[in-house]
Image 1 (cartoon, one colour):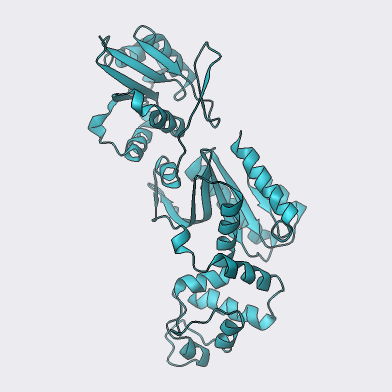
Image 2 (tube, rainbow, N blue to C red):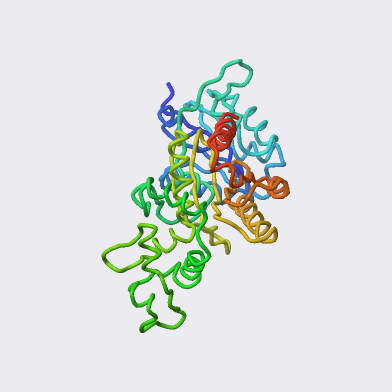
Length: 378
């Protein structure tokens, strides 16, 4: 008589299939067994922390260096953890092909059933059978980031939006009229000197009274805020409002548009993150998960040169390669005019670029949504 069922996972760089399998089948297993190589020793930690399990709650097989290439040693190391009175539910998706083959042959000697996930397709396949079961579990953003060992700030959602959707849409129209040179000069001063600190006394900054070091006066600031209906009774511009006026508004605009166009499983804005053992410190403007895909959108109200655009693309590509791996889909949304050269530069780095016309014409915005929906079905 079998006493326990065990969920078995072979760990690789892509821990998402491991996690989806465990979450989808967790009611079928009393225990978990993870099999990993020395090169993959960090990935089980990320998987365990995302599952919110204690390490001692999971049986872990960490093969010795290069043992995954030695058939007899590998199977002997795994066999020590197996028992004839247990039922094994085995995920063959991870590891090397050689490891998967060894695991299949070894576990076939016991009471086992086998599955394979053709990720990113949300399905479980049974080897040798034309059977497919849907994976119903859907990843949230914090789970996705945690599975890659990323540290991140508390995720900001609807409650953290600086201005309501209607105002952001009106600001979009103001930006595209466009602003006068004087208005742009005011915004540039806010961006350069007050974006990350805000303004504690608008009147004093406008008149240049008692300013601290690195602060400059902004003549006409009150009038500008009144004309765009952004004034407030407290005579204060918070750092979040300063960031909104100087580009953050476009992040909120895109966030709102995506939210009303796609039934995302999870959405966040302004996600701050860094690699656990690296030097990366980055903000992700708009992030959402849909059908177990992660979508990251970099939002730019404009850039002055091809060189600046290249820097934006290289940064987005570096984040994608270093932090997310293959499953992440990265986009740059910008309010510059469309340019086929920019499309090619972005595409060469596996980034998708959309210029201004996609945000001013409904039919072109719909093309973005159709492309995202199509990607999520792959």
